[in-house]
Image 1 (cartoon, rainbow, N blue to C red):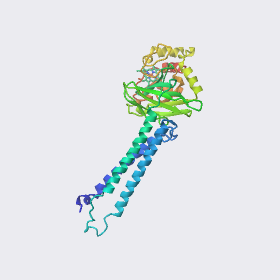
Image 2 (cartoon, rainbow, N blue to C red):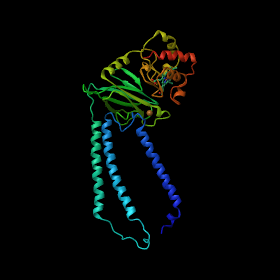
Image 3 (tube, rainbow, N blue to C red):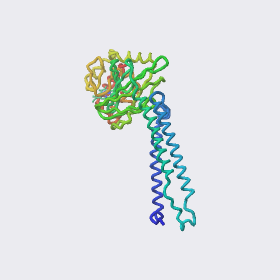
Image 4 (cartoon, rainbow, N blue to C red):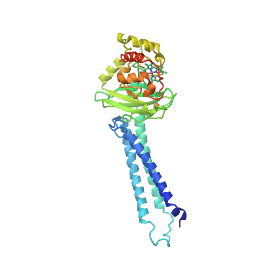
Length: 354
Ligand code: HEC
Ligand SMILES: [Cu+2]
């Protein structure tokens, strides 16, 4: 007799339904996140480079082992529930009461230990493979600094500073060209995550973290900040542009040059330097040396504005300079309250920064 249970089947059923809904929401949320956008460019199950491939192989093995365990346990449970359920006329007689079994106890102690041991071994092997990779002296090195809510990208040896788009050469038959990244933060914790290239690595204030990538396919890879860092965390997107070694060299050459000085943009330059833009932005070769916002020396070479918040088109740029708060609410560039005329002039100037 179980009066307390049988009295409230309605409540129990409602609770079970609630749990099922919660579980479904959590699973659905993870699946949508994993499969992200339909083109698959942020799909964790479609790695295109080391170390993401190594991570994926390990994950598939772990998922496979867990699936087998789940099927065995759930199968036995379902079998027991159906086979030994209470049938009509069972009330009177209690089933035979058995005390334990040493064989079964041994089996369910030893088997899990073996499984966990295998998982520890394969996981340590993958971690070692990824973390022990040494940079050759001539390897490309870049520093990525997380800011609320954009990425500063520096190539110290090459003398390049840019933002939000990391350019790297592809490895191919002619040579291996891994890029070693030093990750830092200017404010709060962020996390660098480009799913098709590598796992996540955090950017922590007052700390240097290291990671490497070695893409082999030309293309643009998309990523996100993966550690909640404030209002515009969701629009702190990162692009990794993988180029042939020749294209990469050309890009390096262009980025190393000082800013262009085109006569047509003289008026806009005056407005830019008369405003406090210079306190937050650097334009190399000029007196603008601000470090708070992205380096604008070659900003027209970038595909997007404000870390993927808007496309880098004349209209997008105009909207941004007019009122960044309308494009990326809460971002750390204030509305500069400029007249239409001033906006036009500044945008004309910015467009010469190729
Ligand atoms: C208080 C500091 C500050 C001032 C002043 C400021 N900016 Fe910014 N600016 C920023 C920050 C921070 C960002 C990055 C915002 C983000 O992505 O969240 C930014 C982004 C930009 C970008 C996009 C760059 C890119 O590649 O994504 C442009 C262009 C820009 N600012 C132009 C200007 C101009 C023009 C002025 C002057 C009229 C100006 N800024 C004044 C802080 C400032
Ligand atoms: Cu972030």
